[in-house]
Length: 135
Ligand code: CMP
Image (cartoon, rainbow, N blue to C red; front, side, top):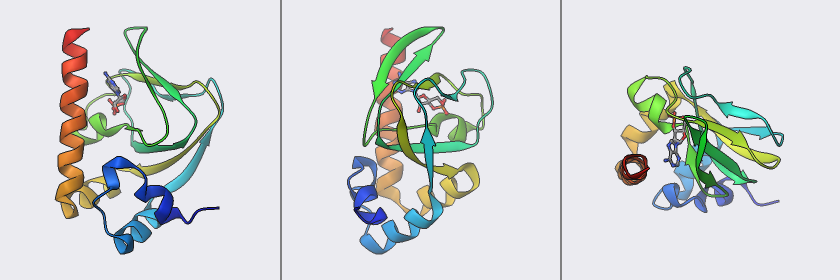
């Protein structure tokens, strides 16, 4: 099995993070398994986790309508952690999934230490905002 830092290094968001920092990140991010059909985030509810997908797929729904599917290398859960507001969408595992999860209190210091990760998050959040506006 690949070392945790190798797996995390393949996540585009973390592509600029040095190996020694990926090792630290691997210790902060707990492995989380989900079964097909599990609801991981629920639109409108509070949430404390940020997740990257290592294996499997999930659907993202807003107002009961599927807007995106996510797969290996994608991440979700950043929006409620950034503004401490409710989850903006419901994320459901469409297959069994293996993810890595980080808590809100670990997420902020990690992002503050890594400006390239902050920029990557902004790019994705803006892309998701534009998609939401166009829907
Ligand atoms: P958060 O609002 O914390 O919880 C639900 C997550 O779904 C959200 O963070 C994003 O990570 C993700 N999400 C919301 N809208 C979209 C979208 N249009 N495309 C992809 N992912 C989305």
